[in-house]
Length: 185
Image 1: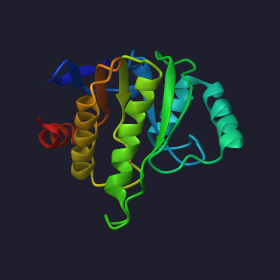
Image 2: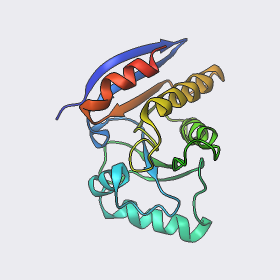
Image 3: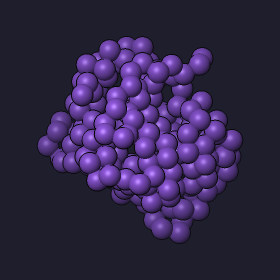
Image 4: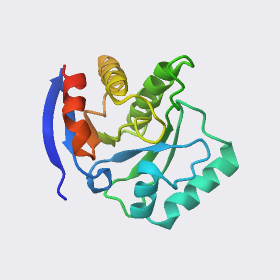
């Protein structure tokens, strides 16, 4: 399946693209992985990214956790991208949904914002993100999309020097319309 641009937004000199397709097919500087705190990439989008990247991704992830400890919710870790069409994988830990009473919105915002911040620190120009926490972590999709939008727009308001293109990749048809409806700028 070829990735398809569904919608493009210009925010000042920056571009936000909504993509229908497979995040592992993205040709960008970094792919963001919706990870768990131990960077064990078994299920969800993390499993797909890990299988496509090859065994070194999990090996580097294990080494990262061994050296620095678990990745906290809202924070990031970086590894090489293995066999993917990217330089890096930025692993972020989004929140598990507990009904909205455990600061889930704040943690999701941080997961997205800190991923973009890390890409800027690495002097990258493009990054692709999956729908963090909206899959196996159970965050309500429509609510998550609004947080993604807030985080990326707030990030671009800081006038980053390097990162100029943020791509959100949606893999399933059932959520495409919901994403566009809730992301619309």
